Amino acid sequence: MRHNARTIVAVTTALGLAAVLSGCGGGADAESRTVSLTVVATNYGDSVRKNSEGYWDRVTLAFGAEHPGIDVDVRVYGPDEVEEKVAKLVKRGEAPDIVQTDSYSEYAARDLLYSADEVLSVQAQASFVRSLANAGEMDRAQYGLPFTASTRLLYYNKDLFARAGLKPPKTWDQLQSAAQVLKAQGVKYPIAVPLGPEEAEAETLMWLLAGDGGYTDSTNRYDIASPANVATLTWLKENLVGEGLTGPVAPGELNRGEAVDAFLTGDAAMVNAPLSLIRQIADSSDSVPYGAVPLPSRDGKETPTMGTADWVVAFRNDDHRAAIGKFLDFLYTDKYVTEQAAQYELLPVTTSAADAMRADKAHRALWSGLDTLQNLRLYPVAETNWSEVAATVRKRIGGAVTPDGNPREVLESIARVTQK
Image 1 (cartoon, rainbow, N blue to C red):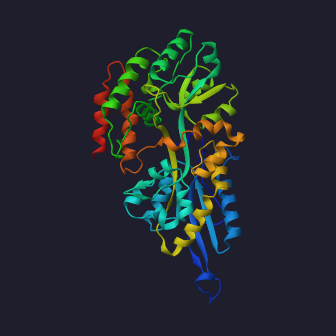
Image 2 (cartoon, one colour):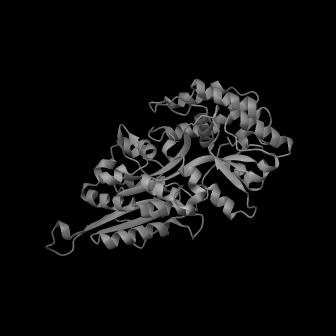
């Protein structure tokens, strides 16, 4: 999951990243020794005030008070640094005990990770939101433990909709009709559709799911050039882009950041965006009055909502396995799951935390996202070549909706990459 607002910094707790097992006296037995766990985590902060180091400090201090025999040393890196840092450690044979990042499949495929049932208590493992737990599976075993989740919703400008006498659309026909009215009233982007290279795989998946398709079929195998996907992009090309309802910038040249900026300034009436847009709106001087709903489906029926997640993985280290399990059970208590979600406008990954937040008016801004949790569809992160496929989507998908574009040919060209 990308977090463009996060500051790219590397910070470290006072303790280093050395994984050692130190004795507490010459004749001490195993139970008297201190285990030192190493953790590499991702920073979600967009300022010093919200830097993730503070979150991990609170977790590790509280854990240490309850488990004096286990030290937890954490390094927090920016999202563009974590993958490289971990890869170097693994290559040197110094893999951290725990890593929190946006993928798991590469190391799971190399049999370097514990599965969830090898380190978590039954209670902790059963607490995960089912759609997220399923997305963390490879070969019927769960290696990715969901840490954060988000969903993409259709945000609409309430003032522009009220002025046009519109209600949030529930079908594609209603969406097109609303965009036509907004265009007639001079709205620059009736609906912004960012299929540019920044994050086109997210916008694309939203539309494919709304059209009863997706990147995978019911067996979670790639099915990118399916008839449903071709029909979706054809409708998008002919009924929104072709009718001039997506604004002055071609979707293939419009990045998500630019689309969001247009929404924040009132130039865009509708835009698909992650829950982090709530924070951007709150921090914006323009103070856009907004509503958020799932992207309408073709016929108004409920379809899966596009979601993203970051993961926690535990590297195999039999000397530390018990300690890893204790720390992960602690990390997934409601207190810390809720704190992480609330601080960064993300969704909780356990059902009990989700239920509590849905019942608490203090979290009202997240309710629309919470309502989608059980029906999320994530990227096919269990596929080891997903990063290459996603890069191809970013490069080519915009061409499918140009005047001369051919949705079927573009999707088939992407599908060929999945076979490599």
